[in-house]
Image 1 (cartoon, rainbow, N blue to C red):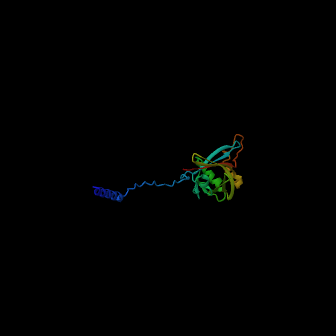
Image 2: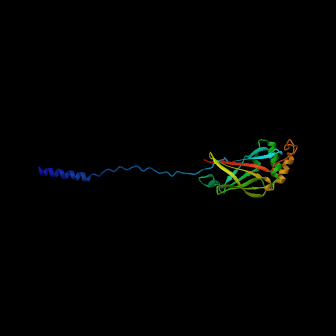
Image 3: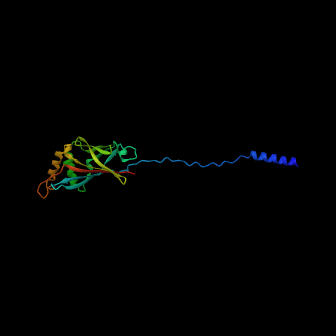
Length: 204
């Protein structure tokens, strides 16, 4: 009887030792690298301008319908993306919602400037400031411009004096052809050299 019990115990021990414990593999979750940063929304770049006439400085608004933005970078801020970026604006795309005025600007103002099929420039940032290098009438100048980034829109704003770019003759030519239209209540016809520029681009 003892012999039978001993045999049974030995068999049970052998069977137990031969069983392999099944291992449950814990599923490994795939870690995805999140892509961060901003991207410029295609065809969202805009440039608006405001010129002035008469001694009362009556505003005349317009825009450019074509703007090419090039040499942008990858980055997480508008400043990083636009650092060193260049732009080109064909003057033929000037638009004021008045075909006659558009024609006069092209024929008498822009045609009086040197090498101005397009207005060009670049952006640079340093010490939290935005600098615009603008080329007009074969004159290149760098100026600090105000800038902000709100609701995914980066915008710059500045007032330029066309006399700083040697555009006096172009201003005089435009004022001559628009003499009566630029005449105020005092009878004086005036076309101002100051022009306010506003540019913007959307990010996502």
